Amino acid sequence: MSKTHPLGIDVGGTGIKGAPVDLDKGEFAADRMRVATPSESTPDAVAEVIEQIAENFAEQTDGQPIGITLPAVVTHGIVRTAANIDSSWIGTNVEELLSDRLGRAVTVVNDADAAGVGELHYGAARNNDGLVLVSTLGTGIGSALLNDGALVPNSELGHLEIDGHDAESKAAESARERDDLSWDKWAERLQRYFSHIEDLLWPDLIVVGGGVSKKADKFLPQLHLRAPIVAAQLQNAAGIVGAAWLADHAVNSNGHHS
Ligand code: BGC
Image (cartoon, rainbow, N blue to C red; front, side, top):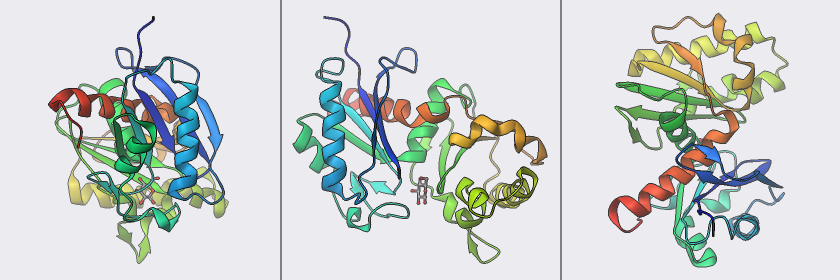
């Protein structure tokens, strides 16, 4: 039988996407599967979709762990916030729920943290000592802080209060669409956002991810920051790849997963 791989699954507001990940290359080992997020995105409804995806890749991922991202703070397997998902997730021990249901080791992680880990090992944050901020611009703003290659989880820098507003409500990609902003106008908001972060954290590198990073040439050149600011390289694959990496690491680093 051919080599099996860990499975990465990215749970988003509109789609739930998964693929087996070849960790030698940081690439999908098979075509990604996408299922629309159930309109009532409760833990049970989402678990059902995750089960479908796991079954679809049963052969390619046999005996391997599963890494799952959520757009939420996750500490010790328990969901703590729900800014853009159903509030019934809060307090759920998702790692327990899903590993019982799937009969596999499951690691659950914040979506931006997973993307950050993907970029750290295979993308734009590779070979960077010091402090790297990976910022995902989408429905919300996610953040991953990587210090000398170590993830500081759940940094939630999208919710900094800036000029009296929750920053993501003004500077996320969804705010650009909602307010019908030109790239230049949106770049002004991003300038305000990233320069505030720079004053607090002094990162050595800023990596911008999320679907809009494909169009980075439309807004990154307008930004003037102390640190270099670059587009993510794995784009929408980063979360799936990072989740699979973390799941594999959780199983193989200490013989058990938390
Ligand atoms: C959530 C974060 C998440 C980000 C991107 C924010 O609203 O609070 O946990 O990483 O959106 O999905």
